[in-house]
Amino acid sequence: MTSSLTRELQQARQEIEAHARAYGLDFFETIFEVLDADQLNEVAAYGGFPTRYPHWRFGMEYNQLDKGYSYGLSKIYELVINNDPCYAYLMRSNAMVDQKLVMAHVFGHCDFFKNNLWFSRTDRKMMDHMANHGTVIRRWVDRIGLEPVERFLDCCLSLDNLIDPHSAFIRREAEGRREPGEAPQDEPFKFGTKGYMDPFVNPRAARQKEAEQIRQRVERQQRFPPAPVRDVLQFLLAHAPLKRWQAEILEIARDEAYYFAPQAMTKIMNEGWASYWHSTMMTEKILDASEVIDYADHHSGTMASAPGRLNPYKLGIELFRDIEDRWNRGRFGKEYEECDDYDAKRRWNRRLGQGRQKIFEVRRTHNDVTFIDSFMNEEFCEAQKLFVYAFNRRTGQYEIVDRDWRLVKAQLLFGLTNWGQPFIYVVEGNYKNRGELYLMHRWNGIDLQLNLAAETLKNLALIWSRPVHLETLVEGKGTLLSCESSDAEISSQELSPSECQQAVGQD
Image (cartoon, rainbow, N blue to C red):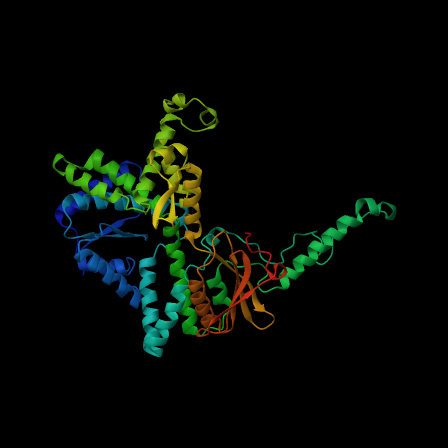
């Protein structure tokens, strides 16, 4: 299916890799493979893993990619896999200048995969493990049949956003741990003292307050789970009445969800970083005079923004360039921020030359949310002509509603937080002492799409094998959505304020 690089491609690869390392990029060994367009579409449909398990959605993805390529609507220029070694795919029919661009872009991605904090806990042998996942699922298909396996896999894949992408970086102490000398957990701490001093050393009000805190803690510990759980898939793996084959499939879906999560969390940064380096290397080191026009044409096409859509390549590369320029010129810090002279700020240049160092630091520690929050400012939004738009029901068209950079930034952050998807927590695994599952939606200003929520509840009911409930807000009113079984209709019940979980709307 694959073929090795031609002598010309191999020579270009060695040259570009040498330039990338000279610039300070650090990456795992990178293996390039050359594929025909049809083969590349097939690999892309599998998410870059050709040995992945069989599933109908991969066929749908392939069909869409194939039609897009056949009709000239879309074309895959690069596909690279976070792995050690990294794997990257080149399209055989691409012109040589495109192959050089893709290689330079790939080395930028590989550097990001290896060095960005949010990828540090990902599985670096996922190419092998994806093959193992495929073997496991094919084995269960042979044992119990395609239909039940595929139905359950559909269910698991529809829930793969119900994870906690930050959990890999959270260290939790063991429940019930107590340091030497610490008071027992079922009674307030009391200082030893003489009787007549006791009211002053151990005031009654303070002991009553501590006793209430202990009571609440004990009550939480008696709940199941003791605190809201964001990783719903892990809770289901630990407590749902799953058969062995179901548990293995659910665990595969969860493992793959955690593998892909950092890519969703760093889409703008990752593409911006790779684009920054391919443009730097191509224009400074790689291109010869005969290739400049073709490169400029293809690069500008990548950076173009479609109407109504934000291009992560364009936003990422421009923000990295802006950070580099600001730190080269010293346009940051208290003195710069407090300067109210527009002309002075426009001409500001301390010639610090710290830009390249700064963008490497940003690449190492940030994700898209912190990237936008920390570095998008008024000057950047004005330079990029960013704005907020909305649908006007009167005119039937989308229109600009504001150019305030703070609103632009807030809108971007709102869409990037948790990938723009709702926060769902498990708050009770034995609701009303009947073994029912009670979930909570942490409402943040946007109501759930009730049709999607209904399908999610049905899939959860299939896994939990008992009724499932979801508390949310609908038009500002506390509402409980309930599903008795995977093929039952969803019922809705309005809740009084006292019936709502205290965690709704809070972290």
